[in-house]
Image 1 (cartoon, rainbow, N blue to C red):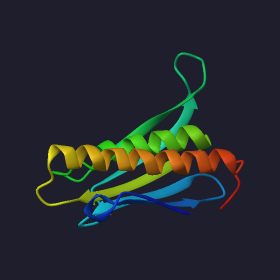
Image 2 (image 1 turned 30 degrees about the horizontal axis):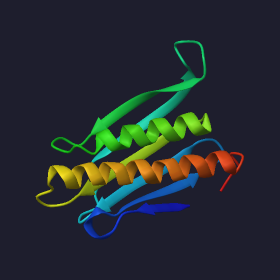
Image 3 (image 1 turned 90 degrees about the horizontal axis):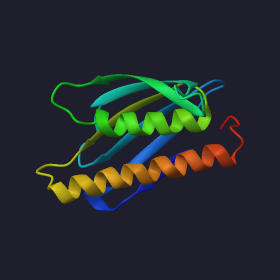
Image 4 (image 1 turned 90 degrees about the vertical axis):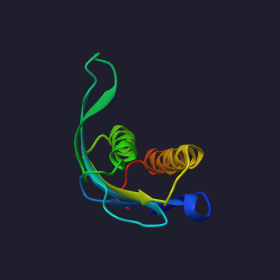
Length: 127
């Protein structure tokens, strides 16, 4: 399943592969897709004892900031699914302004919300 948001160089794409147990996602966009970070999220009970949470292992490529959106996406999908989630992220635009970075981040949040909603609505069935 693929989810997209944004236009032109601010467009992001989240490709989701559902496994028998767990999920793999690739978050890319901008002008140059690449591997900028990988995050593995593992579900657990919230430390407050209420609801679900997850632990994350984050591996950023030195000099890249893709781990920020990769972690948010991995946490959201893991919490929605209750299973391990691996997210690879790579989004790049040359000379991005603060506003463009904010918009890219919001586009990432939007595709993540769509994917989480889809997971919840589909009853966590294999896709």
